[in-house]
Length: 208
Ligand code: MD3
Ligand code: FE
Image (cartoon, rainbow, N blue to C red):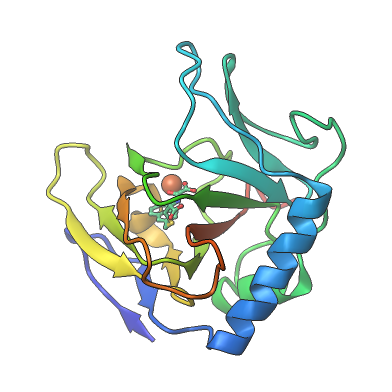
């Protein structure tokens, strides 16, 4: 376990190789089961309706969605209108291990990146509480991840996130600007047709 200080932000933990290959395969099977019930959909940006390059789904009581009207957490899949599947037990266990003081995770966002997909620099601030950390798992092709400070203008550092790596964003890092610059195609054999999956577990509401 290592904790890396970035731009004086505490609470960024980078856990390379947290999941071995067998565990990555099990997580992938979990993701396939979720996506068979809650298919990946194409989110679009509020106001402009421009599609993201990333496709998304969710599991848990709440899911993060973005459409022409805005970003929000909601209980139903935007296309099928049915509740999101449960968070697989392997991921609830991960949350309990890495966020032991936090109430249960309410949302697990699934991001799917094909080779050319990216995610611009942003903050995760659609939740109603920032006390709990965000826990993120990477599967499939390696990506270059960028993280800065609490202001968009702050300097950034970039890291490679490989299949099986876990990142925990707590403390001040919870509101750090971050994004995915690019996916390095062909760097993993986990996904037969390539691409990258990122799972982010989040608490949305204040503890009851
Ligand atoms: C730093 N996902 O879903 S994961 C997102 O790889 C998101 O798909 C990226 O940013 C991805 O919002 C990055 C690592 C990550 C996740 C949440 C964070 C880094 C973070 C929240 C605060 C600061
Ligand atoms: Fe984010």
